[in-house]
Length: 209
Image: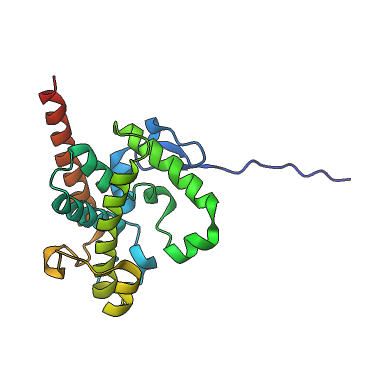
């Protein structure tokens, strides 16, 4: 009788930084902003079904959401802005899954996503998970971005987009950077914004001393 040897599955991913990130039990020590920016700039929103010469990346989407959130919530702290910028951070590892497919996959995806969110937030000195009020504010900004992405890039009619994402208020197409950027530009802009927010956080912490 032949016996088969079970080879345990690999649950980690090697990053370009050299880190090995365990997907099932991610450690904040294995999270690097360079890996996040690189990954998000190469993950396509809408499964790549957008117009333009370049994919519309999660990195660019994150920049738009943070910008909308900042303008909608002028009293937001630098920590809040960082949470907004990193709101889709886990997707640098697990990719961007469209909402209809997330519903089919179920809770397993959410468990992994939540663990990665916690690891990312803790790595940068943020609470593991945002408070409900902050999460809701960022979600509103996310829906505004999604509306313009849908109508400008993804072929949605305005009426259809309003049904799924609501009618954006206070923002128009010409007030956001909606034209898809090359990956290297989206990556650079994401890192630049991260560093700017981080400088604000450091300044705020210094003022509290």
